[in-house]
Image (cartoon, rainbow, N blue to C red; front, side):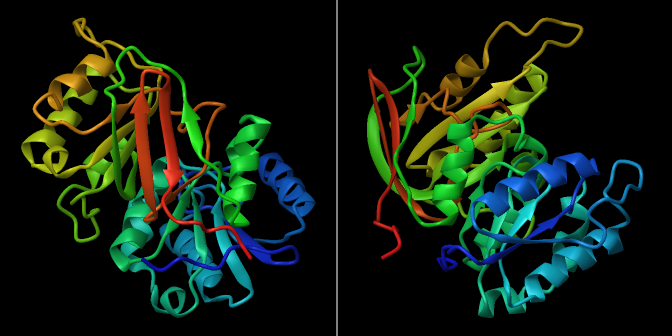
Length: 304
């Protein structure tokens, strides 16, 4: 995997909106935070636009992303929000200059599409807070994004969960939003799950939808390929007309019962105020004990 250079004070980052529309106030707040980190910020020309559920037309969103890739001064591309729209532009972008001048792509939720694309190109990316979520996440979560961008990676701890399955494994970290992973099944840029540590999270889904998606991962053979599984925040889970007699934990544990790898629940990353940054494509060691989970990057990546 190609690891983009970590940032240094004085570097330039770009804010782009490849998915849903965003209010200017949210971008302004993010600019303040990034500036306080010693970074210069470029805002995509169409970042504030709105076209229904999209931040401007496909062409507008694609153009901003392409320009950020092509700009040699830009060291990281931070998406302003998720929502929907990344899948419509991801394959219309030319990544050649990104491969010759690698830079971090940052985001979560709908940006899972870009994480998977980056992984297929052999480039690491960062699952972390976006401009819209900057005001809502904890200071600790923002600090993990800062530290990750600047190459000061620290282990991440998760709380004790009755559903945790103990064990230890090492593998390439992949994943993102479960619904997005389900939606890109079978596409050319789908993750390679062989020996991977899979991270999943989701928001406002019906429990039977979670069951359907997890069953897809099981019957397609993906769950059987993993070395470990991390379940982040599964927020706002709900029932449909008919009650689903089970929980996210029971759905997942039932699906992985024939495998012996560790499973960590309640990991502090996803659509809640705890959204710790992760490097997709990097090799991590996952340890799960009765005291909770621990995720530690397997290789020292701190800047010298």
